Image: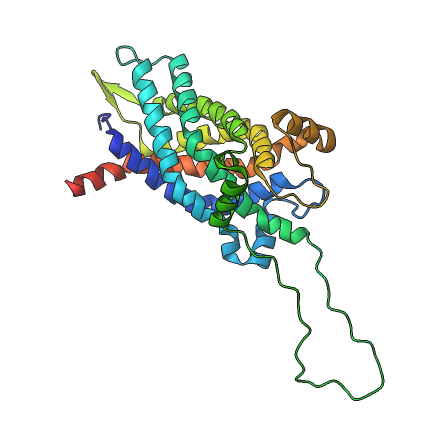
Length: 325
């Protein structure tokens, strides 16, 4: 099967479909990653499986999908911008159809920079919704006062139970957005943009060149025609490159998550910026804290990019465009 050129509209559709399918599959692990990274003093969760088990027990199965609506809504434009930007930069930097390694790195850098426009507000809202359950689990549960034993008739068996305090209302993406716009303006939605840029640019600089070179190992030439790598090669290359890039930038992701979390638990630090956050984490929690959620990130990113390569290989975007013609 000869290597075929994929049109930009087809790439955007493939990226959107891959994002929607991938996010749906791995979102609970991403929620566990956010909650584990935000733990400072009180250790509510011992690890990923413990976090997921406690979340299901206290919030139900759909509690694992808090914040998923924001992610599913914005993941398509995010992937569209990233893929389109990478494609444009690769074309601009290519010479006679050949793109050197430094060009691949620069194209990934440009793609990561452009996607921050959508990624920052998406992550900002998602983190608040994902972390709400962890904050609720830290609050002490007040037991109802025991009735004092006193002589007299037994209480009625049909007496109403003592009133329980109302649980705090669950935050919503709309409510958080409105509040941020009222109190901090548009800049409120872009809190942590620098940290997001600091994470996404290195990720793209690592992922795109690494995937291209791993995937090229499975390509062969028949005469002057380059043959497309088999499905398993593209899938494994996407998973491997995604995992390596995800783990490499985990310390930057921890900083970004901490900066973008608006509500803190009891005794937890607030941060004035990237440098202040880095110093406080190092001083209070040690170097190991910068790798919190690394396993979760690898388990999230690997399937996401593996699914993306599967969607591209199957030509979902091309098929949909063909049906519309």
